[in-house]
Length: 397
Image (cartoon, rainbow, N blue to C red; front, side, top):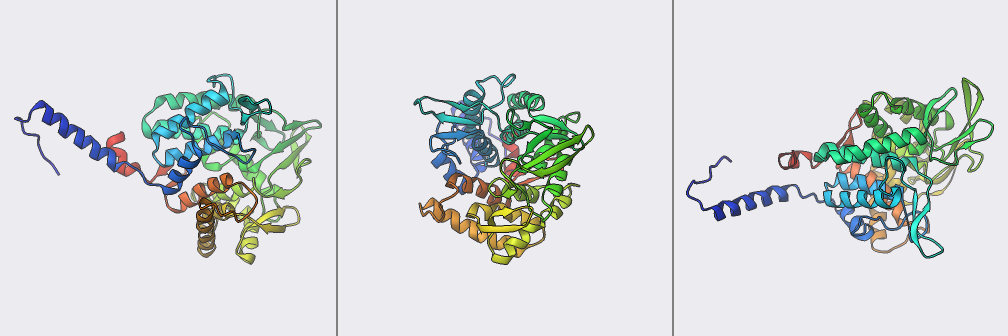
């Protein structure tokens, strides 16, 4: 509707109308995402710290902080986004991103002090931090977030990226503890979502991100011969130009609470991505195992393809995009029903399984159900497309 403000209105009336118009525009951009709002009200402190984790009750992790940062972006929750990032930057990295990667574990120690409990980094969280910051800078026109992302990426490249013989550039799980004697490296396939690597490659074309995406696809394809992903994988260099994937010497070839994210990331990767279909083709074992019982297994012996137990409802949520991407909508529908039911019971305080903590189930549910509700999707270049963009574009750009 086009209309003109009459010239004879008083200054106070003009101010009132301006305030009313801005209020209408602001209201049009209010995003209702009940699952995120319930999570944030329950587990995100006013200062931005994400409470609870898969660790001890009084501990917070960089993983939880980084996931919550992404979900705040998906929800157009700018105030919480800023609080979550400010807390993370200050408490996990000492406000010194040019020199320090975020510590992965913070909380109350045995001495009673609240501080970093393990200064080692977690590279998956670092990727999610950098990604969310880049996208927030783009979508909300906040260049300071891009500056922080640049500092993070410089530290990741310096401390968490390695060149492995015969495999190329990979993302090590952290700064310390994953390079072993006799040319052995430990890798985690769930730490390297392809959409994030695509966005980083678009942002830094000369960086290692494209090569890491390619090596990730190789890792998934060759480390799970029966169509399953492992939580951890070893890589043994056998010469200056060659190496072999081996069973992880510390955790074995189990696929469980880490590996479930590999299927999730495969499902949310843009279908037009050249790696999307090859990765899905490498992960067919989970589809067969879930189809046989209707419930995803909690654990898989990756080498043998044998399964054990029933995964919690978060596993079902994580597999919704995976089944949709594999053109198996009935399996996706079954997992959707189980995930929604399990989440509602958990929010009411009904504990259906002893493990894992509700934190991890809820995180997986926000990813899987949020995608199923079309609240976000990843484009081929890794940029995220959010459901609120069209409604809010007039007031935020």
